[in-house]
Length: 237
Image 1: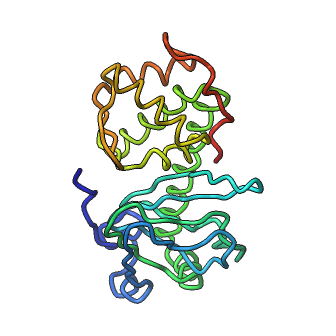
Image 2: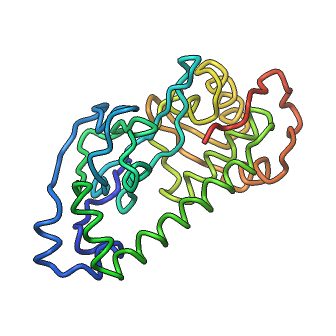
């Protein structure tokens, strides 16, 4: 699978209204390897992170120590914005999913200054937050209380719409997104594979029959052959 291409901060709609000299002094580039933590849950919010290359998973550990992945974000997406205005800690952790991940970090006070003084930047931030909220609401609605097979079909269909048919995630990553165990996800993916819907190997699921997955996702109930033994709690977001 070819990872999403790297982009430059100035090419993003988020920064289109920020003068080049101001943008250059507003942030710094940071590079990470596969599996590194960008920030940890509970740490003070230091600033906004903009993904330029690679992907980042947002993971929250609940009181029961169970890890829930609440989003997989790619070039052009922002992470770490929840505590920007009130200075609270990061509600979740951010972990890189690709061997080479590059982010543009804007320190919190610089972000707030840009937000106050550059109207186009403030509007772009509001637009991105609205899109993020809509995405989360739709995902919760489409997965809440439904069997694992349906939830996984929703997740795979959503990821395909955002990044194409090659989903470079482990079974454990997908399990964290659905809110179940790796073994359960592996069983469901094996069933999908036998039906000719997906193919893949370690850290990689390729969607072969997107229409079949979409049909299962839209049905909201078990397709023939899928039992409810794998039913779990809804996707935590």
